[in-house]
Each structure stands twice: as C-alpha cells, then as structure tokens.
Length: 104
Image 1: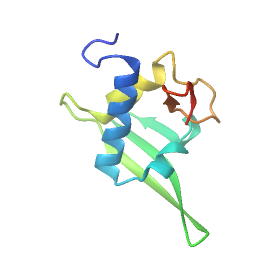
Image 2: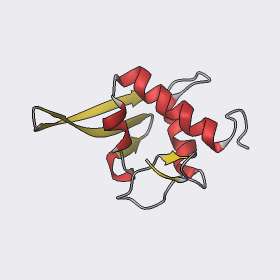
Image 3: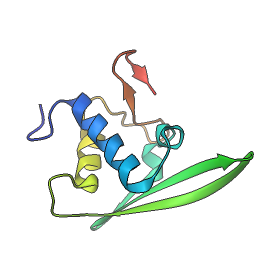
C-alpha cells in the first residue's frame, strides 16, 4: 500500500488515466512507453512518444509541469516508476497487465 495512492494496481491505473487525460495520448502510444522515453528535469517531466499515421512515424514530446495538487502526474509517475511491479529495465515497457500477469 502506498500512502494516499492505493495499491500498485490503482497507482498504475491512475497514472495511465492522468497521462491520457492531460495529453490526449491513445492507449496504443501509451502502451509503448519505456523508461528511456521518460525524462525528469527539476519540476518538469517529458515523455517522448511515436505516433504512426499512414505508416509514417511522427515523434512528439509531451511536457508535464509539477503541480501542488493531489493528482499531480509528475509525482504519480515517479511513484509508479519506483513501485516493485514496474520494470527497472530501461528498454522495456513500464505498464503491467494485472489480469494476465504480464507486460502490456
């Protein structure tokens, strides 16, 4: 149990939901995110994504600023990355499918 954030499963769901809500990222792009794609700088988090449209990949950088509110995405992402169930390898996806017990 994490303080105020619920179980690891709840933490992952909250993190994914906040990213989708604040960046308009589709689940397909979200599932491809690895630790290499996430950069933390002071009060900013940058996520690099690749969207394929008409077989042409487009690279985007999504920037999130740290906020002093209860649903701060930067703090939630840091909590998820430090969770036991999140992979520590840099080139693997960071999301976990709890029902199938494997990576998304």
